[in-house]
Length: 180
View (cartoon, rainbow, N blue to C red):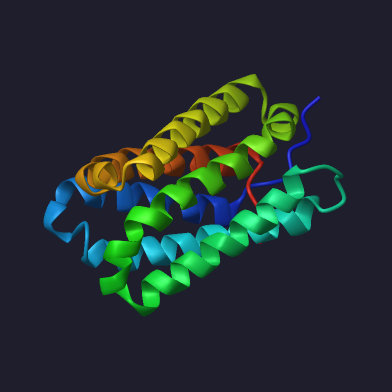
């Protein structure tokens, strides 16, 4: 039985923003490391707020999942503010923060996989599972080799931001998104 909670406007906005950022990574490669740090900071703040809202909405559930949303949201907001305040240092910190953000966001999404399956169905469950497992692998590779991060962040960031955006849009359409 599916329990649709309504259209998720915030999740839709996040999805569209992530898709636009992902496309910009490929269209304007000269902007990636310096100019887009600011955009990534804004995306991190917005996604962090969405994770915190998700925590507020599911705090009645017990277990590890809701707390991970709060932690992930807090880390995203803090990382995003740091990138917005000092984009130049953000380029250097991107090699550390970006993989941590990937990993934290993926763990947060995976912790809600059973709820996603219950509400949105098997298709959305498997899509979310695959996208976030890929994110964990990429995040781990970037943590292990910071030079790998510098060399490939544009490609990984573009592809993954588009996938995260599609995931967020699908969540909004399926009724799993956070409501305003």
